[in-house]
Amino acid sequence: MPARARRAVRLVAAAACAGALLAGCAGGGRPSPSPTTPAPTSASPTPGPTQGSTVPPEPAAVADAAVADLANRLGGGTEPITVVLAQRETFPDGALGCPQPGHMYTQALVDGYRVVLARGDREWLYTAGTDGIPHLCPSGEQDGGTPSGAPLTPSAG
Image: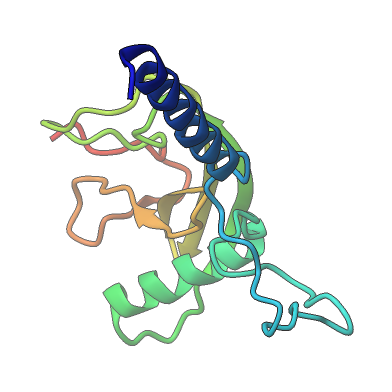
């Protein structure tokens, strides 16, 4: 076969290979559904959040979790734990209003919750991120609380 004919055959073969590769890529790399696999159907959508959902909890749910945490910390007692405040809040940084010495925090606005609980003449400050998991802001006192009416600020150390 002459050299010119061999080059032409190689060129045609290369073009055919390139075409086949491009045709295979046109599907976006996703396999076509099998004709024997039925498409999933649903009679009605499932209500409520699904796994991995980012629906934030209501402040009352965060307060309930904080009450449960505080009751566990304090143990038994005759006086009930009451919710003084439960609200959504945008904090100035990742400390969620409760910075701890030796920790570094995101320097951006962070959505979350502020919850204030009371029992007798004591109050406790809880904060939470959008996950709704409350964390007690330690006051430096043994029970983590402060006398009612005192400023609810985290311990400086």
